[in-house]
Length: 212
Image 1 (cartoon, rainbow, N blue to C red):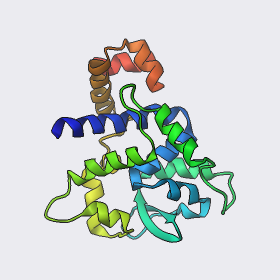
Image 2 (cartoon, helix red, strand yellow; image 1 turned 45 degrees about the vertical axis):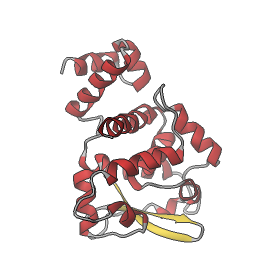
Image 3 (cartoon, one colour; image 1 turned 120 degrees about the horizontal axis):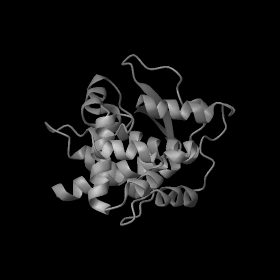
Image 4 (cartoon, one colour; image 1 turned 120 degrees about the vertical axis):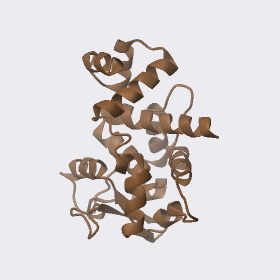
């Protein structure tokens, strides 16, 4: 079980990092990871659903709608910044992600690790497994998130255990990036120049991270 969770953690981080080559693709993938968004919720998301200002708990939120039912979900600051950038020239009721469900699945598959292909649902389930493993004291925080519950308790859980909110998957952080690149090199045996190409980084940074 522990090995599978470590694999899921690596795969999700891999998809997040490699998708940075496209802001639109990266924003969609970050939203799935940050909020556990479904295909329906991604299809229904429009510009006005991305709230500009943080709530009373200091967190950015997004309104997600599925089959006429809506929920409010917290998003980390980097996901929020990516969505705001994507929406900059869109109208209020214009879709944020102009993709069909099949296209969404293909996009995620394109950024998946070589040994395992993901789609919207499987990526979402992988994040759920990671978060459920962190739930303690009988609290089902995943259910709270999916029900659209907000408040200090949910914020604290996300800040402590969600890798986007806590910074554990922040590839701009040198220590985080070094850990990931070293693990990637160990798993794949790829050369620094190949790793740089796959991750969309400079070879200079990859070599520096490998020696961090």
